[in-house]
Length: 614
Image (cartoon, rainbow, N blue to C red):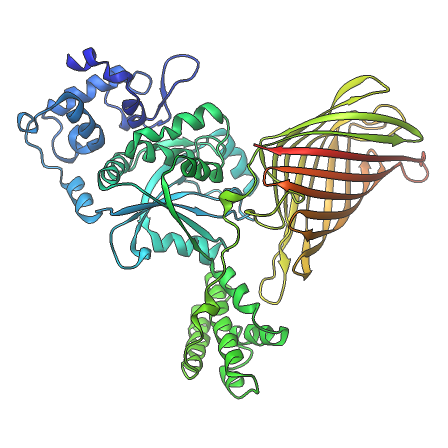
C-alpha cells in the first residue's frame, strides 16, 4: 500500500486531523467518542486508523451521509492530495448533509472571539474562546459561532469545578448564530467580547469548516484546565494552516493547563491575527452612558426603567436636551438589561420600553461619538498567567526574630495586587500557589503554604448594579497558634458581602466570613469559626497599587481561639511582566476563651517579593 511506503500515518497533518498526542508511550487521540474512528484501535493507532480510512473511501457500505467520504471530508481531502486519488475511480456517493452545510456556510473570514472573564460564574472564571465564521453578510452578527464546551445541567458551582477538573463532562462542538452567543455573553453575563480576526485564505477556511463538520456530534472528555474550550479550538487552526503547530506547542509547554487568554496570545504570536475589534457588553454600555450623567440623572433613569416614573417626567423637566437624551437612552438600556436578567415580566418590560422609545423619538439623535465605548486594555497585553517569585523578609513571634528567604510558584492567574491592565478589576483567581521558606537562624526549609484555590470577586455596587462580592480560600497554611513551630493545617474559608467605589481608583469592601480548620491543633483536630473582613484597594498610579486589609475570626467549636489579622501591601510594576510587592502583616492569635484563656500569640512579618510572570 502506497500510504505505508510514504508513512503517511507519521505525518503531522494526519495526527492533527485525528487529534493525536504523544504521551510517554505510543499515541492517543484526545477525542473519546468511538464514532470518530473507523478502526477498532484507531484512537491509539494512527496507522491502523489511516488504513481503515483508505479502505472506507473505496468501499460502498454504508452509503449516503454515513459513508467515510461524507462523514470525514477533511481526511478525504488530505488523503486525496497525498495519494493522488482520482475521484472518478471512487464509487459515486451523494453527501447531502455535507453539501447542505457547504452551501449554507461559505466562510469568507474567521475570527477568534474572547468573551472576557465572568468571575461570578465557575464555568467562566478564565474567560472563554470561540471561533466565528464570516459568511459575507453585511452585519457580523449574522456570522456563525463555532463553540466547544462541556455539556452539563450542573448548577452547584463547587461540584461543577470538581467534575470539570476530573473530566466528568463530555465536551461537544456546536455551530450557532453569533448573535445568540453575543446575547448570552454581553447581555446576560456582563462580558465584553474581543474579536481577533484571522488572516486565513479561502482554502484554509474550507479545510477548517470540513474539520468542524467531522467533529459534529462527536464528544471528548472536557477538562477544565487541559482539554478545554481553548485547547480544542487550536486543532481547527492547525488543520486550516498546519504550519502554525499550535497544539504541539501548547501540549509541550503547558501539558496540565491551558488558559483561554494564553491561547489567544499564542495565535497572536504565530502571526495569524490581522486586526482586533472590541465589542462592549450591555453593562459596559450602561456604565459608559451613566458616566455622562449626574447622580440625580442616573437615579431618574433607574426609576424610569423600574416603572416608578413616566417618560413624560423627563420631557417636562428643566434638564438640557442632551441630558434628556442620555437619561432616556440609559433607561432604555437598563430596561433591556433588567429584562434579560428576569428582574421584570415581559408585560411590564414591553410597557416601559415602548414608552421610553416614544419619548426618545421626540428628541432626535445624539452625537454618535458619545456612545462609542472606549476600549479598555487589550487582554492579550495583560501580564502573563503563570508567576514565579523570590523574596526575603523577617518574622517576629513573641519577641523571637528570624530572617527568611522564599520562593513561590503560581501556575495561574491573577491577584488583587497584580497589575489590572487587561484583567477584570477587583477579581482574583489563584490556583495551586506554593511557597517554600528557608529560615536563617533556625536553618530549616519548610513548606509555608499551598493555596489550592483563592478566589475573590469585588463587584462594586451602585444605583444600577446591586452586585454581591464573595471569596473562597482553601489549602494548607501555617498557623501561629503557640510559641513553638507553627503547625501546617488545612483550612477552608468562604465569605460574602458588598463592595463600593467611592471614587474611580478605589474599592472598599466588607464581608461576612466563616472558616474551618483541620490539623494538629493543641486541643482538637479541628476548629470552626465565624467573623468578618474589610479592606481597601487603591490604585495610586498605573504602576502602583495599595491594599489594606483587616480580618477577625472567632473559632467557637473544636479548638477555641480568636484570630485577628491586619495587613498592608503594595504592588509596584516596573514592566508588564514584572512586579515588586511589599507586605507587612500583624497577626494576633488568642488561644482559647474564658475560662480556658491561655494568652495571646503575637506575630509580625515584613517581606518583599520580586515577581516574574511567564
